[in-house]
Length: 254
Image (cartoon, rainbow, N blue to C red; front, side, top):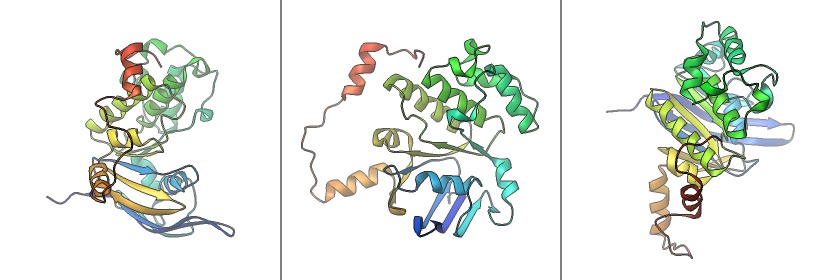
């Protein structure tokens, strides 16, 4: 059965004066998958996402989202996507309940705040101000606000940067839960373990170009087939697993 393409990017270019940040990249995202754009800082991941999200002008190329052409129907694209704001995008003195109502007003939707706070395990923080949350709680709340629009596609730009290992794992489980409810998710990250755990397919971007695109397993198998061997014997667990096991397996706050 052929998969439905929900995002199509073709020959996308973004220039800032003499500097070309995105150099003619092309990729597709299929409905219902978690697709990762991986690469070092400055590779062009965030710029690419912001163009698809209608937040940044492209220089040239074609972007189709859910059948809508970015050049002709950007407002239709906005209706079907959810975009995670960075922490600085929130009013720090409003409570979480007030912020959910605020976002509901922006999307012209009547909202029940607890529906979204329950989804991200923050009901007990309903009356807390945004600035009082921990890093992991802020990230979970920011993901909750992306869901108010009932989006078909959710964009997450480096959602776990700066979080401790337990908070990262909590967020991974939340992302999988959102996907299980029918959303397509596009995520940028420079954490390879995160991409391996979450993504069905990944595009590796470097210096504004996509240099590989496949499933994580295929990319790893292709590397091994070249005769590559890791210097250290691979074990069944890593140090992060040890840390989480010792400091609390349950979903603690974070």
